[in-house]
Length: 622
Image (tube, rainbow, N blue to C red; front, side):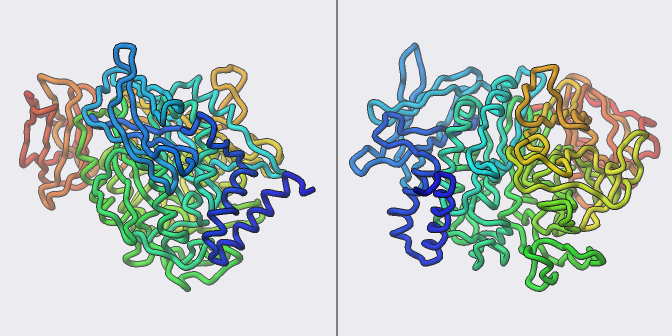
């Protein structure tokens, strides 16, 4: 008899051979169902529970939900209903047809009452029901809490399943206002559906009651790296020549399952091959989050740009290279559409006090060793440190909103203060640790960091990373240099928590190991955390001059926008704390200053810069 731990490996081999041979009927009719049944124990669909889980968000009065079903039999109904509890009775408010490719059902309900908790029920037939609560918008909470995750690998090194019970228990203890899964929720490159069901069974008990952002990364869509090239179809299964490796319908199925419940996209035009987009924003409790697709529009490294060095074309593993030659003219990162989105997003503050960016990975190459400590990687083109010029354009847009950045992907938890022209002239990022960290990475610089504060370890401080980008490493959770393969903690696995305190405009990053109780005084975070910053630290650029101090009468916490009259560009927009603000500017000249709160607005034109902070005052009645 074949051992149960060996059988999945044989099935993976059969799956790969079937895919390479192009035998789609064999794959979908026999191999995939057998693979999923034996490795993931998908329940028999004759059970009452045909609904696995549901994800939802609410934004701007619209509630969107994706219900994920198990496969149905040919004679079973393809209609799903959404009901809410009213006067102690279930009231049906929407129906939708199931999309069989991925077995999802999608709801979009306008005029949602977000001022109260609403109990909901997804119904199929007369026996299958999935219940949960759509939470009211926590606008009255002072501190908005986000729990953030990445890298949901499933199998242990020696075989067997990695439980997620400790993470789910901590989510329940934390009771966050938003869940963010930044990518690699699924690591199987051929059978997203089965592993997505498993993801739902593991996290569904908390997802059913908490708004959830999930965005797919490279492994979710079935490849090692993703340089999306605006929807191009690539020709290698690993994705090395840019674009999407899997069948386009497979990519659409993955994105439909993971992102259809997100708020409507900023610009819904599809990219090449009719692949949809999902970049958008959502406001939760007065904190506004931009959701980026930082892989979809990204350029691939041109063929021959770097000689193949080892087994990965995305890695520079030989010293002595010239980082500037890697900064290819015209290479894209976010693409023009998302840059326009960020510019507009930075100006919109009507429903929020603070802003953050959610992306798949951070805008830096923040590791030196990959896989093991002997494998030094000088530059990783899969990171958002490349291409450098495009990376800088992204940071320049993000900092206009004084936004912090939250991401995953790197397998290494870090807090970084980013710089474009100077160290720390842009925002902070928090890369959260992987849920189950199989592929280890280390931040292990060869020289000590510059400008370290007293007592700071040598691996912290100011650095040029592998693409010569300026970063200040604030905290890093390296794995042990000889990790215990049976310990998730020595492999630096875990999850992140971000707390936005609106009254003080402070942001706190927490980095928790696996297998702890976050409420226990005996358990602690990874060394270097928590890290607390001020909102204004996210535009750390030094002032060249100042505008007169703005003192606002008649309202509190107004929005102030500064526009450079020389070129008409918006310098930044910020909802200030209190009633006074000293606007910094980055060249001497004249500026337009807009002060608004709701429908009330005052516009000051021809405001001349002054040399000293607070040396002049303008009182504005709003």
